[in-house]
Amino acid sequence: MAVIGIMSAMHEELAAVLAAMPDEQRVRVAGRDFWVGHWQGHAVVAVLSRIGKVAAATTATVLIERFGVSQMVFTGVAGGLGAGVNVGDVVLARSLVQHDMDASPLFPRHEVPLYGRSRFETDAGLSASLRQAVQAVLAHVQQHVGPEAVTEFALHSVRLHEGLIASGDRFVSTTAECRSLQQALPEALAVEMEGAAVAQVCADYGVPFAALRTISDRADDDAHADFSRFIRSVASRYSVAMLSQWLSAESA
Ligand code: SAH
Image 1 (cartoon, rainbow, N blue to C red):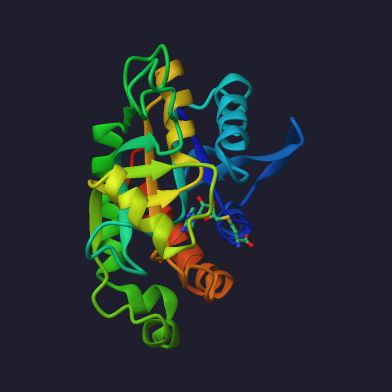
Image 2 (image 1 turned 90 degrees about the vertical axis):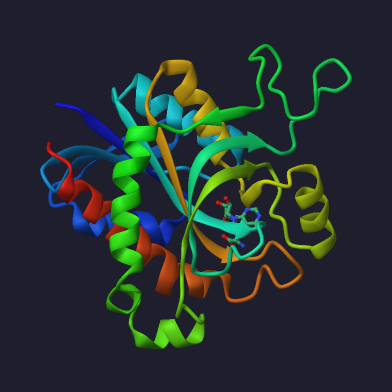
């Protein structure tokens, strides 16, 4: 049976996933708690990614080497960079880049040395089935987060975006830094701190990978505002609903 790895960036998201798994068993490896069990009839290992590229890469490697996962899905929050990528929207990655990788002049800026490329693609088939789940959830946002959250975070016309996600070891929370990222990577839709590292590990092992991020902020001077409230009342509910919808539509 295929084993699905689910990496959550935030505690609240993992808690929501674990609440939906009937039989999870904790296995401790590399100082991390991996939760092995089932969800919607699928064999699943759920884990907190930990924050930052190196921590997330270690978590992904253990999922593959120790738990034999054959598909990897990442959920978390991210800052919106692209025009019209707003709080409450969801970004499904087509490819990911490390915005803080720069071995120039030896290699072009953003290129990962010895890989000959800067972008790591997500799996088209896996992303296509997740897309349907995201669309189904976004069509009924109020049902998943409640009317108060819809009003508080202005979730009246949330959208799904697909494209490039930029990752780096920095919480981007100034307008100046946001602008310089937009200039360096004009096609980037969102910025976060783990995805490109996990994409690289999955590419190394040939494991299909998909990444889903709910926009929690605009990566500007207001980026810290209501961050934890948003994760609790919106992002973690989206994530569990989208994953649950996706798994129920997949054959085990
Ligand atoms: N203040 C938060 C910090 C969490 S780190 C806390 O107390 O927990 C931010 C997490 O959200 C990372 O997993 C990262 O991937 C993502 N993220 C959300 N917005 C981001 C932004 N503007 N820049 C970088 N990462 C962001």
